[in-house]
Structures are given as structure tokens and as C-alpha cells.
Length: 114
Length: 112
Image (tube, rainbow over all chains, first blue to last red; front, side, top):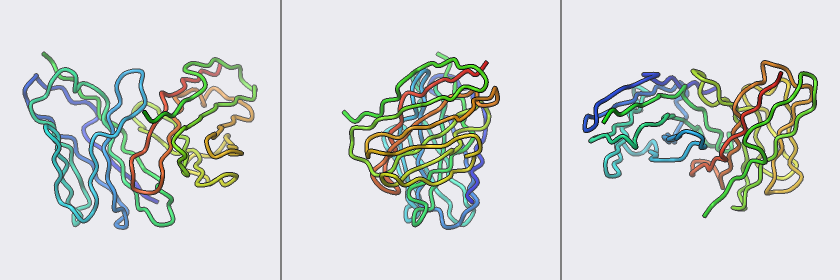
């Protein structure tokens, strides 16, 4: 089955700096890669996603890049703010008969210091 | 506003008890999932269902079962709770593959 590895497990940055979180996946059939943000006491919430026919996607201060050949994808947050502090999860899905089954990475605790 | 609601935020149960975790979604989604969240391990899939009365094992189904009698409701059952099932449990639903998954707020279960 699919295996997703996420690094780093913790990331601490100063407000205004950039943050990068990286994930690798094992199943070459995976074609959908979402990123979720989990704030304290809440369930994860989708912040951005990318499909395998696209190399990069941006939404204001966040962007995701995908390298299908190397089987890795990354989340980039620019101009970080204290409210970006949360746990971030990457995920991958092969679609097809997996019925939208998402395999998640281990999570990254991002702390943005004012 | 879309909603996935889990019946309890916090639960404390004794070893050997039968435990029911309930999840309800109001979005008419076909797919529903139960994940377990543990520090350093991310979210691990326990069971999922893609239709009423249908269920599939995820990556860590041992010690758990599920029930989906109605489209909007997906229940996770711990037949005989054990201390190693102390964890955060998250329910999610989505309409079809490769679309946004909506999560409940989670149930923190402690088995003593």
C-alpha cells in the first residue's frame, strides 16, 4: 500500500520567515496530494491540494510543488504569521478502487514566533 | 456550512468495556472514514465505508469494527477496549475520491 513520509516533525520560524515542509510517497499510482492544517482542539482542514497533472499551485501565501519523478511534494508558506502555528499533514491518494482512501504523513508541528 | 459531528469530545472508559464512537455528516457524502491520530504517527486509517452497509478495512483494523446503517452515520466500535486504544479518533467524509475531506472535531478516548 501507499506510504507517506513527512519531514520535519517540528519546525520553528520567526514571523515573516518562510516555512517548507516536505513529503515523499511510495505508490506511483497516487494522483492527488492534499495538505491539511490542524489547529488545537480541531479536526484537520484542507488548505491546498495538487493533482498529478500539475507541478505547482499557489494560493496567496501558500504553495505546493510536486515532483512526480522523484515522488515528493512540498508545502511552502511565505511571510509566516503567528496564526500559521498548527500541525500540518500531507496526504496522498491513488484514487481508482481505493475510494478516496487518503494516506497521511506523520505531521509537522509548525511554530511561528512573533 | 458543511458539518461532520462526532458525538463526544472526550470519553473515559474502562478496560474491557464496549465503546461506541458516533459520527454524523450532513453533506450527503458517500464516503466516510475513521482515523486514529497519535503523536509522531500521523493519521492512520482504521475503517472506511463507501456506501450504506459497506465497509472496508483500513491499515489498523484490529480491535475495531464499524457500522453504517444510514448514509449520514458511521459508527466505530471497540468491542473490548484496551489501554493501547487510548487515542484521538477522527471521523471524515467526502463525496468521492480526490475531493476535499471534511473532518469532525475528534474524540479523545482514554481507556483506564
